[in-house]
Length: 287
Image 1: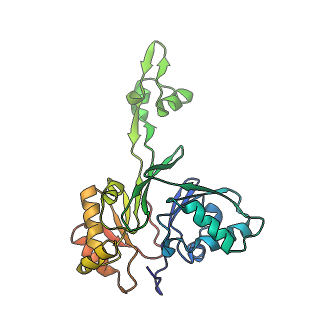
Image 2: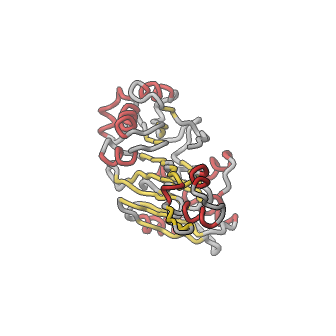
Image 3: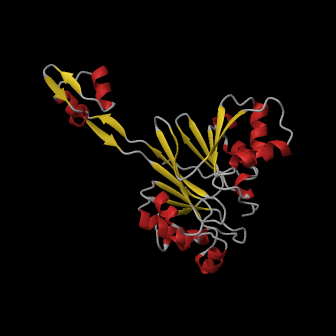
């Protein structure tokens, strides 16, 4: 994918509490972040789908700017096999100074990529001719106190409620109270990202029950043959995945530069999956 006057290379930023997850790092990403009002210091992790240039050419500039700004954290970078070697080439190719930030590289396979107290991120193998992964980032389910039930059971405010919320049983006099007696579960939200790929099982696995599905949509459906040749998806492919997998909202991305008006992709997809939007640069969505 080449950039146009209106559309930059690939890059999606997911903000959740203290985590800032950048999915792919296309050319000019740091300027896009400045325009969007995002500080480089907010990036805690980078997930690389594959090593084609339109998904990675922003890495050298981003890291050099982080160096100059005194980035205070360890930057975790995740990518397919060969990521460590390619990073080594990058450091050889450019004049990084001695203040280089701490970067921890993780070469991934299918499955859990990282896990925190609040989030789980997983990767699924896609089909694009080179090692390519899509990602899902999901909140963990959380317990909340049902105040009406807790009051009826005479559970006092304080540490005992905290234990119930953490999923522990408590003793109240001679009575044992289980978490389900006075709490309810809030299901965590899931964001899924389908990078460059032909239709494959990984697409459906990523999209399953996603609250927000971000999917490549390089071609319109009238170019299905070309999409198969180059291992990409059409807008209708993305819509079919969203519908079959039970996604709630579909955001189309990664449009071929031949298209000036991405509303055509939106219209194409909506014939199958109504809740579709053609994403634009700097689109901000709350999930």
